[in-house]
Length: 466
Image 1 (cartoon, rainbow, N blue to C red):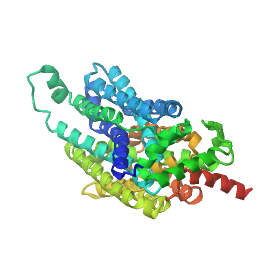
Image 2: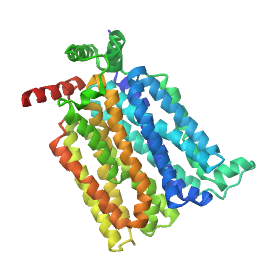
Image 3: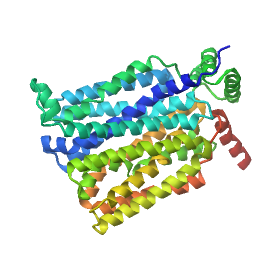
Image 4: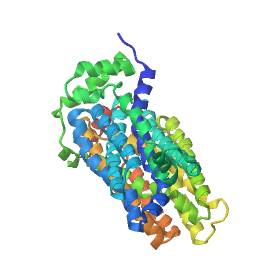
């Protein structure tokens, strides 16, 4: 009988995590292009916000469709769709002939991000054994942060080589005169790698179980975690399914008293993770650092530092989330993020913009987010929903995340102009604070629990309460 293979587990989860890499790269690469595109197309503040946030609108549409598609056709085929959308967007943005064309291809990229942002962590969560699930899903966030930092590196490198000329006029336009084209087009390479790699991974075993393909699912589970664990998981799945659950759960079940708490967690935690201001720093980091006295090139360099800190502190979550649990990381990280945001606002209010202080506390905020909100949010929303409706439920949770993301992307330049940097960061601190209450009051500790055990927990809790 085939034995478990940890290497196989890691490789499959890394392939799925490439969706996070493309998510991070595509959302962060925009930061280095904003001022360049604004100059080339003479954009107003509203048009600038639309250029940044139009992809987020695509994300919302993509997420809205991804839950039903992934439940109907499988997680793998929908991930392949996201890779195709990423590839088309990168090439289209690089070659677009107008601002309207650029917006259209940014929207297509947004569709890909929206689909991948939901299905990638869903796939990893369903694929991973319970004792490794926190770490494996955190790989998605790690890939996301690596995508962000590589976008910063590539932006900074391309911005520093705009004096170069090429024999071909089109290449000179892309890599020199309008270098933002090269910045956006570079995403085609990882998108192609993601697309090819997806043909080598299996379908989610829990989706196969939902479709009655128990033999295929068992074979995959044995390869992941050994025969004993595989047969226990299949038995637990069948036990829950035998209690009257249909093959494909209705989203209406989430609004019943049994799962209402899970629904609140799934809607609030992702939303709060965005309105804390993380993407204001990612999208508008160079502009914020310029307001703090950095030049554009130094601001891009500061943005690279932000990205590196994001990567490094994500490893804290990877190595501790399955040991310490989800709630301790959330408490420490969110508390530190709120304090850092308040201090940044005070520094701007007192005009203490010379020296490294603004950058230091921005880095502190990023570090706190990187080991708490960032990875733990994806882990929790991938765990708390019942098997039969997990795809649709995670689509709702991810939709909530992208609505928050869209609002931050659209409103940040208006807030920076109208309210100033200090009040902008204080508002982010205010929006971040309720997550502490949410963690204390609603979120259960899910460390080490199987997905079927967590599903049974909601039913048992409701039965005991009533």
